[in-house]
Length: 295
Ligand code: ZN
Image (cartoon, rainbow, N blue to C red; front, top):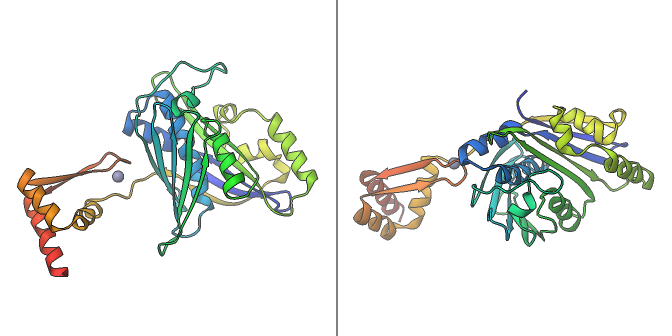
């Protein structure tokens, strides 16, 4: 089974729900960035939330999440879109601590409890929405719950889980977001609160190997859920030599001239996938010709 998410509604459309299996996506970022287990859980939870928030976006909209706490992992930056493509990195991938008092990876200690969660939605045509809330927990799921309530005024329940094997590889990852839409009755909300407070923690559900549909069944009650859409999810970086080349052109002739004189070449490095692109002296001179032909 590869990664995918489902969008669903329940309780006569008054509850919106998302669930995702993100095991391969988180495994890919763990391998690429050599993340240590606590860092894997922190970035993996953030990427799992991002995958579902990407699915809330429309068309070509994109979003960037930034979790920046005062813990040793530093900033985590994750991009996602409505096509199920997710990419991310952490400033310091080599963070690991002893398990916390619940026997879980101590994400809060890696992330820190003071800082900000920022969501930037790129709605196209230079139209951006930015929402920002202070971190309240550092465990990520609670922080996103807070974001939805405060910044988007949508009461939500968020569950995010990442399980890491003893050899640091990813065993399983996944999550859910349940949102209360206008029109939900008090009865629906109290039934839901009861269910969410008694259901197994998300880490148990993904450890049992449940599919996204089954996760929603556990959280909402199977008879309730209507799946509307299913979307493949994967780690994907859209960087390219051409894109970084355009960024170099944007620096202007003087800067490029200096690169040629100082190094005889230029290198661009992608933080997300760790690809490095090299530009020869000839290619850099070609950029200068391009700038001149445009001016
Ligand atoms: Zn890249």
